[in-house]
Amino acid sequence: MKLVLASASPRRQELIALISQNVLCAPSGVEEIVPDNINAPDIPLCLAKQKAEAVALKYPDDVVIGCDTAVFLGDEILGKPKDKDDARRMISALSGKVHKVITGCAVFYKGKTVGFSNVTEVEFFDLSGDEIENYINTSEPYDKAGGYGIQGYASLFVKGIKGDYFNVVGLPVAELNREIKRLVAEV
Image (cartoon, rainbow, N blue to C red; front, side, top):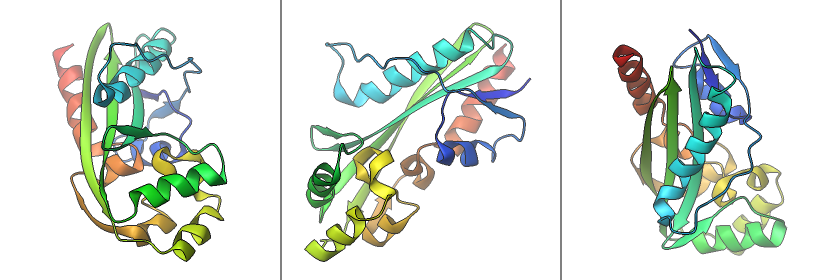
């Protein structure tokens, strides 16, 4: 039995190796569709299920894991910035505030499924205009939800976190490991 990660994220690939060395990465390629009637905090788990389900069809005898991470500032979801102006807007909005990072994880194994969402609160220091400009001039913000990677240069912005650090990186490995073990034991 191997783990199949339905993601192309290099950060998730590094983190899943903490759970197992027997991992295959197979991005789902599915079009992410958010139902109209879903509550915003439930979106990451909904998308994680879509990704995992698509890949599980190709790997029915393996443990398939789908994930999706979103950054929430109040009621607003901050996705990946479209461009430099969007990254500036996001980082400026996060400056001096607490926001939530929610990662939804779905695990499929031999026709059974378990899903969960992990929530971490992150607080940024008040950021100067120069700090924001220097950051958005790196390549870091543009492939990450909320426009930042806590494991990179943006670590200099973090005043504190409440919850799982690895959740903010994109994969709550401790909780995921426990859920995988529980699901495999049930099957």
